[in-house]
Image (cartoon, rainbow, N blue to C red; front, side, top):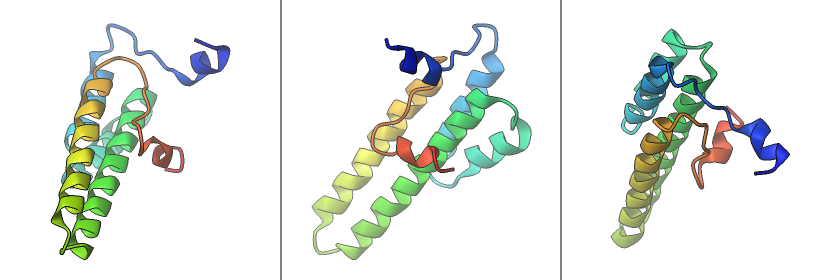
Length: 117
């Protein structure tokens, strides 16, 4: 691991289960509506770990919306729309697992969005 990687990765203390819980909720509740993001921003705004994953959850939500819109536009090609929705679902599951890890891990393909939020 390089010096740059050490600066980007934030570890949660083992005894800070609230951060992991809110990070988990921030991701879990964001697939349909950005409820997880709202809950974390209202209740744990000072918790960098929970906010990081709430932003990741919001990025997953935005990717889900984009996949649904593309699926609607390409109604004649349902395989493309369904594949995109499945890909977002897989990213969501990966993000749920990452939120419980205790480390900030960027979600592939949508993580760049969180840097702008």
